Image (tube, rainbow, N blue to C red; front, side):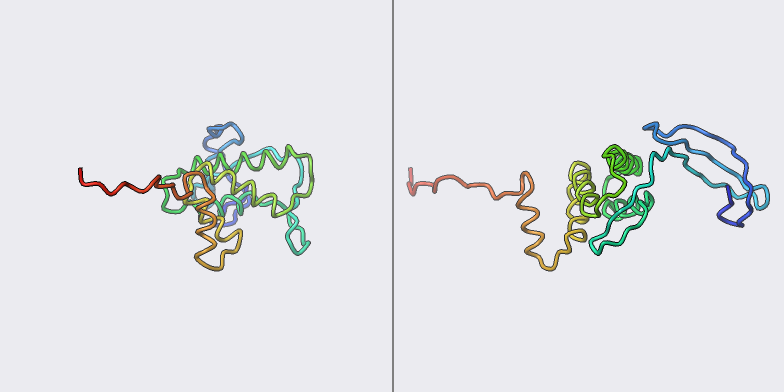
Length: 164
């Protein structure tokens, strides 16, 4: 594995262990040239997934890009990196299990929205505002009122005007 600091082509594995969900192996490495330490993750890749953009362009599925997008939506929220990692792993497993080699960006976005809705509603709204290209405050209002618990409650009948 190439050292990300000095670009030395070799590194030594100092520690290996599975991730909490068992979907990857975490390896702590050290560069013999500059002595820097870094972490790598080894995962099984069942097939090459292609994401088909709205424009029709195709690009390889990028797990790190997905994790970064979810992390940005969860920034300053009580969501641990471990939960984000599990969400990313779950989405990747769903994509691979679909049996499709090409996934539309829209389908991927919907999977992320489902996962974020279950994880953190504020992160869900943040992601939705970018994914659905919100233009005005009304767009937020529509999304929030459509969420469970987001509807305005019926105050019930008017109280009667009595003194006693």
